[in-house]
Amino acid sequence: MKKLVLLAALTIGAVFCSESNAQTISENAIGLRVGGGNGTGAEVSYQRATSGNNRLEFDLGWRNDSSHYDAIKLVGLYQWVWNIEGGFNWYVGAGAGLGNYDHKHDHHNHNDDDGIFALIAGDIGIEYNFDFPLLLSLDFRPEIGFSDFHDYSEFTPDVALGIRYQF
Image (cartoon, rainbow, N blue to C red; front, top):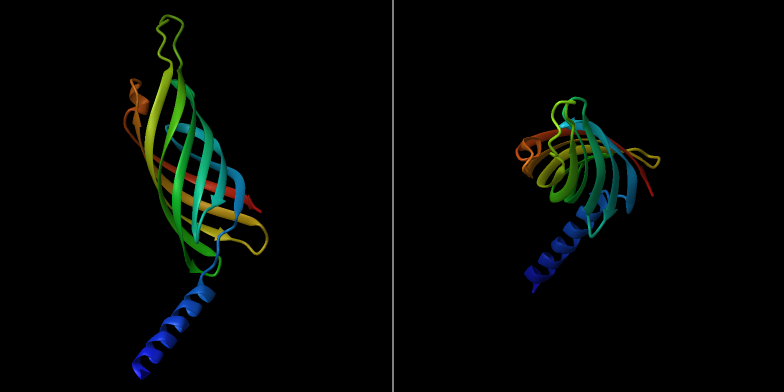
């Protein structure tokens, strides 16, 4: 009986200690994610907490390679977030997306190379939560695209800086 009471006390203590040391993530965050993979561009980014320290992230972005194409894409990710220390967190995630590209041509070539693409993506990053409702992040998002257009049917490393307002 003493072993059972001791085990219960240790379990309850471990649960309360881990909950007191865990930093919760914001319920909502909205802002910009600026970086580049295929070309340069920005994404309007929205994060929504789910359960515990997990969240969904939705990014609507545009890319512009000045000599080859313009593109718009929507990416959805599921992320797992862990506290490092203080306001620092790190996270990993996975997701998918869809987009549309407009291939730029010179005036001699009139072929229509516009179309859609799909992608799968991973995500790993670090973020800092300030004492006021600001979240800064730096992440790496490798993407694998599926399309007839060669720039969106290959591996694309995407590194970006994010700045979001939390509410």
